[in-house]
Length: 82
Image (cartoon, rainbow, N blue to C red; front, side):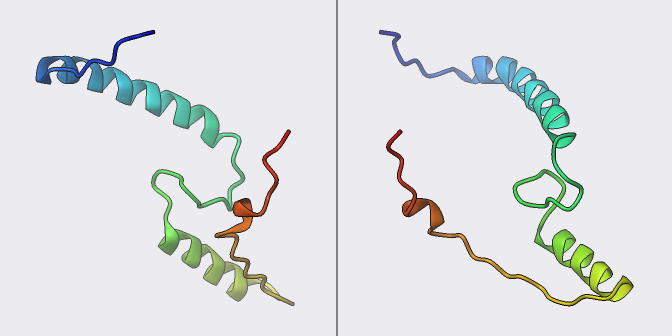
């Protein structure tokens, strides 16, 4: 079994830039897979951006309905048995 170690300040300083570069690379790859109207948990996109996009969409075309769904506890009810 691998021992758990705690990095020193020097260790953190050496690994943090590498981790940030890796994260940026992964985000760039995954961002291409998301749809343009996807705002959840994406860097540089937040609630206000989603509301602005909704406002523009409502004002620029005819809207018949708006669906608001709250899935906060949805995954608590899904069977996790394979």
